[in-house]
Structure formats: C-alpha cells, structure tokens
Length: 156
Ligand code: 4NP
Image 1: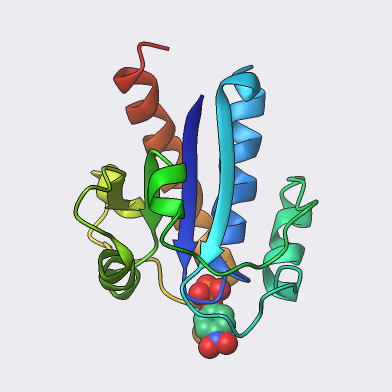
Image 2: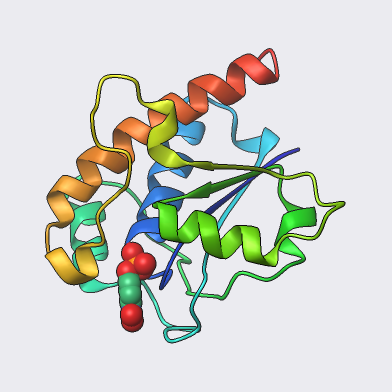
C-alpha cells in the first residue's frame, strides 16, 4: 500500500480538497486498491466537521466526490502511518517537522514542490482569501504531478 496524507492548518479547506482530487485521479487511473489516502489539520478547531462550504461547492462543480471528508487533527503517529505527507504551505511544513521524532521516515513535501511550471510554492489559504477556484487549480496541478512522481517511485 502507498499511504498519502494531505495536511493543512484547519483540515476543512485545502487538504480535504487535495484528498478528494487525488482520490479521484487515482480512481480514474484504476489504482485505487494500491492507495490509502487521507487528510488532517495541524490545528484542532474544526475536528469532526465536514469540509468548508467553498471546498464542497468547488468539488461539486468539478464532479468530484467529497464524501466522507471529516476534519481531524494530525498526530505524531501519522508520521509512521503514512509514506508521503504532503503539506500546503511552509507553515504546515514547520508544524509537521515539530511533530516528527528522529526515527520517523515519512517523506514530507509541499504539494507545489512537484509542479515545475509555476512560480507559486504555497497553496494560499482560501479560509482567508475566499478564492477556492484558484486553490482548486493549484491543488489539481499539484495532485497530478504528485501522482506522476509516486508512479515513478513505485514503477506503476
Ligand atoms: P485550511 O483553512 O487550513 O485550508 O483548512 C483553514 C481553516 C480554518 C482555519 C484556518 C485555516 N481556522 O483558523 O479556523
């Protein structure tokens, strides 16, 4: 199994969108059985809540299932339970590295590290910007490039 965790601050806007978009791509490529895909937030404010209305609306617009998205807080155990931990911005990276213990080997990267034709390196937080459409565009590019990288890593 290839285990992928998307991480943002609140786990209601960006990382659940990435989880849903990545799951959709994996399903369309017929690779569903090889992946465990989840998302989590570094903060605990929205634990137990569904995705933000803006994220739900954008997923619906692009015909992507947002079923089963429930916010949870990232834990240190996630650094053992997942192979790829994919953050949305530099602040998330710092938060994840604070949780990491020395022996924990998960690969931690930002989603846009995998996209080469963009100057943007952080996915801006739509909780503050309100621009879910732009976030969807970046998340989709990031997820496509991430899947290509993982397919290469695992000879899929
Ligand atoms: P997200 O957005 O990290 O993309 O889910 C946020 C959602 C909620 C908060 C911050 C960011 N908040 O402070 O409640």
